Length: 273
Image 1: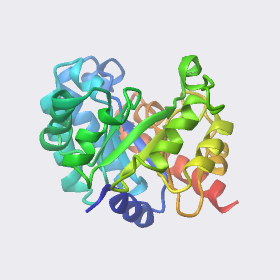
Image 2: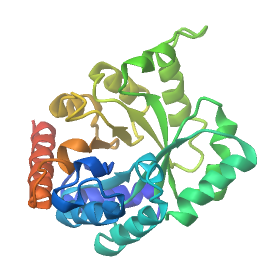
Image 3: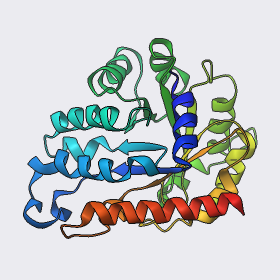
């Protein structure tokens, strides 16, 4: 099944626009697990089990696993998600950006080794940096950095081109248009820039938008929904730390569920309003 179809079905089933980011930091783990990187799988699996009916997707960030030599735990985690939450897509957040045979290997890593349903990519080397993923994996989601949530993103993404458009606007136009050969592209747009979310949505009316920055990074969930959600164009509103570390005690999974439920309800209220 295509990533976009998986996402649409998961959103309808869970009545949720929430994406839970899996960014495990052992120093924040509860109780006896604190500081123990061998518990990364256990911690994340517990979060998944507690929240999978409340989300439209999960987004493990590869650096949080690789930094602790926990790639094997990431493999097990994605398998676990597919087993306990069949139909909930997994977005591997790796922000790869390269060309040719190197890009082909990154694609194999994401889609063969880790069995992800989608991958974040940097498009700033141009079309030939995403073609290896499109050519070999037409059913997988490819989510391109467009207008990111960090303040330094403006250093490049907000630069005006000779055409008069801003760089992030060009990325949105290309992703909606000639680059989207198989209907598999999406865009990353930060929740800290609601006006830019709205502009990206104007230029890319049907692409799914992955929107980080809600919660710990200060983005407002309701503003995000108003700016980005349109008929035919969904959003995946990511929350990581606010869900994962809602409690540092033995009730961490229950607290994560409560926070995920709260965020889902806020997003749905904004959608209804």
